Length: 426
Ligand code: PMP
Image 1: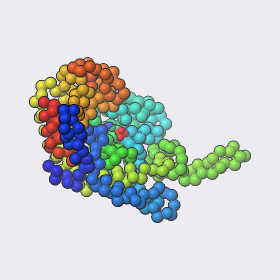
Image 2: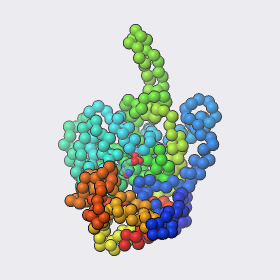
Image 3: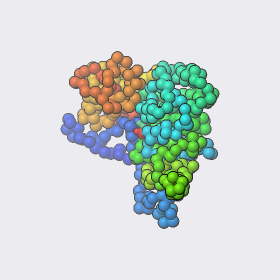
């Protein structure tokens, strides 16, 4: 299986870790939904660029010019990857969280926000200065669309409104009906931002086809290293907003105001993406995100999607053979999903279960409430308890599960990793 998706080979397949039972084993990284390993191609590109990097937009020096070209060309690579419209802007940020906070800071006055309570906290929380309507968890994709339509129909028309929705759940892996939600939003004069943090690494995302207004995603889940993210989409709200950060790079012209005119400074801000990218940007992070986008655009998603489907089936069939395991799902067993599966095990605390997978089998999975507390309460029902910070409450061994276990995978996951995982759970 190592030849599968060869252009998407990843680093870190031969890291060994010690086992408490003695000896060592090749680490099975099954937490791609938290952070995926970097592609070999991304690492090679970064290594080739490393001797030359310099600060961007800093004049005529050769290295600055070179870095500026790479930085600006990176926008084109991301725009192609997302199939953006001609006049969309690609703004580089630190992460999905940063991108959504940037958009939240750029909302026009009086903007209403509609968001499902099932969202990751990064999509749920940035809108705290707006009037937010939290929508109840739907149990089918159709119900999601109906719920949104009803909520939008109830609002006073004319004012600006934004819907924020996640394309693929970081808990259940289930795909949300993004195109239909976008159509509903637009039919009611609202705009829509897609949180593609979990969708983009597994599935093609076309801004045009989905007809979403913005897309946000993170490099570290898309086979690039940490530190860079993207907000891509309509430029009008972004151009009209105050800069996200004030400082060099965002400003075109700054001049002291005469004392007679009250003093202070007059500032002309850029109206390009630079408006929201003040300071010295993370050129390596941006270059690596663009490299990952190019690798995925060139390889296409067909092989990756087919491979993931095969691995999903293997995991789900394996888990189905363990009566104590309950897989978490909002939309039901047959719902289309990406390679992200969460479950609980009767009689086990999920954190202890995950710790055992790591210590005894060298398998890295995520345990906790996955920064989606309201969703986990819905999925776990009476079992859910007040969590600690984004994670596990304390519980004694053998106590009932208060949180869940998540296994996730993607490019470069060998059969052996998921087979070992299923064996270990059994
Ligand atoms: N949205 C979703 C659906 C996610 O899974 C995550 C990360 N777990 C985020 C947003 C936030 O991404 P980041 O931590 O890179 O900002």
